[in-house]
Length: 151
Image 1 (cartoon, helix red, strand yellow):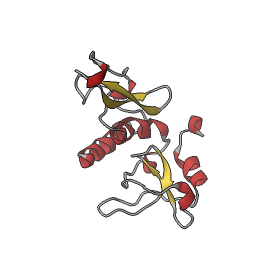
Image 2: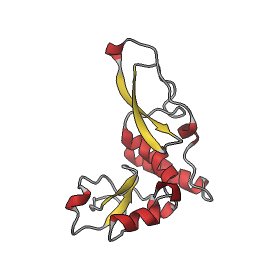
Image 3: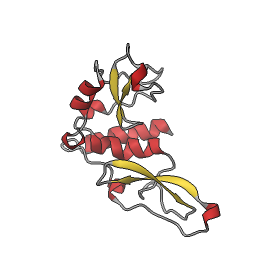
Image 4: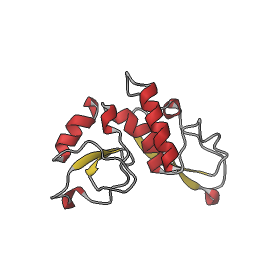
């Protein structure tokens, strides 16, 4: 599933080659279902103005997950919406897997923009993933990848 999302993200980059605009569903309002509190499940939606994925609870029906602004997890929301909207270069949007390292532990590591987390993270090589643009510091990564209003 993550592979298909990565392909979708790459496709969206080329479709929007002149601007880094997120998928149309990222601009929609979040969808909430009617139910009692005991049936609630956590979901994520993209807040277009804040350029971030936020959580909410609902029990459904939530509509079509391929066209509505609803995601089962934060990684999917970040890959489809937040990372595309936050970055200023397609070159920064290489999905290289998850980073489990904290920035304070990254003394001997390079940094890269991580589309799954929608921020710069210490780089960890993962089998089967391409190598992204690498930077010596978090600030270099931020300055190269984040859109101006994110700095």
